[in-house]
Length: 400
Image (cartoon, rainbow, N blue to C red):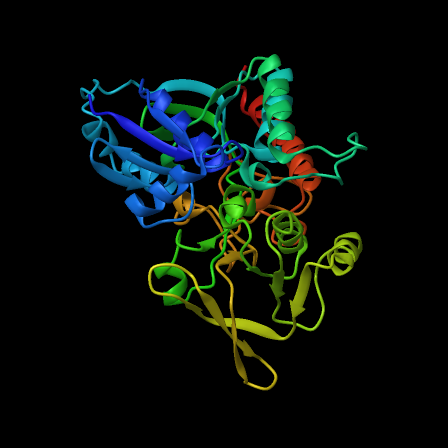
């Protein structure tokens, strides 16, 4: 069995997800904390050519980060790389309600379904907890007057769902078949058939879509300030975006950067008033209005940005060593795209005032259905709706 080395840091959701995936396969590893041992950070950069964590080696092979590790698992190649024996195919387990996805929507649906004694199973994903796992502080969820970190909130949601009997599998769904009943959902490790399915797949960060961004991904370009901000301590940084997420990233980065530049396409922010006030009061944050990133500059690592003013067309150079992209999200609906009605942006269509989709017995909730609000509390509310809708539908179908 090959040795595994992981360069990581203490607060890093992607590191945690990578370790969960490896642990699920019975693996152990040597972990190197690049914050606790700064010299090892330089070693990681020298070995990998990347400046983001985690960086993972299996034997002498550099895998990369969590996304690459998960992609190997979805492709069925990770077990071979880890020299694991192929297991006999697992028969599909029948369940009454299966929930695909976690986060506030999935876990709330699980809580309500479990209390209705539907014995739900949650395929939570390797990045269980959704976008809140990348959120440093949640201040607008009722019941937490002092605020709470996103990961801690998701741990509480998960524990509450489990308390009532929910079974949670922290694995990615690799195949979903909604064309026949019972419906079928598979992961790399398990298969389930279900009388009803609740889709709570959430959304993922969008990227700028320029070549230089992709070329310098993990070399100064990131979508997770919580994960990677500390790795650029003392360096100038930039954030692209104008919503709450962008300003939260910028405020967090001021812990490490002497200056953070927020680049926004418009002349005013979309963020909530309180977030705007905090950002504009912070002496380390400045704004570039009516602007977009034309190119990420650098050969091996980011050394700057070429920024274009959308009103004048003028281009300027911005010397930074890290770019954090916070321009919104796209729904994670690829696995069901040809099987269920979606809108033009890929969000699952639901009937007004319900969680019912175009396929009878399939319900949807959370950010995968919501291009408008995208809040933890609205996601939780629609998760509740989906569980109640599923319970009533099963009863009408005569499923005891």
